[in-house]
Image (tube, rainbow, N blue to C red; front, side, top):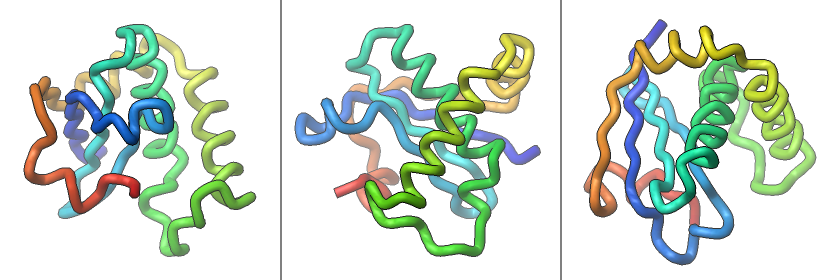
Amino acid sequence: MTKIDILFFPFPDYMFNHFGGFCTFSGGRYRVIIDNRQPEQLQQRFLKHEFGHIMCGHLLSSDPEPEYLSPEFDAREAEADAYADAMSEAEYAALLSLSTQKHLDSLPDCVPEVLPA
């Protein structure tokens, strides 16, 4: 499996109540971005949800990204939630072992182009 970069940093205020995390695939690497202002247990939940998107193949689809809050978007979110709910601790640990983690104090330069508007 491809390596996963996990970035933890404080999301801008306009995103705080709307997104706890999101993921991208670029340059042959997955990038998971998690809001570190959220409680630690919630950060873990968001991380499992984003792993769900990766494991369900949502980022590798040749289909265009579904429009935010469309039925297709909601279906992907539900599938990622279901995957996260069923994820064993062993699978979570295995995915973490494929990851590099960085904890940052501010928005990194590589992120603005992928931030949801």
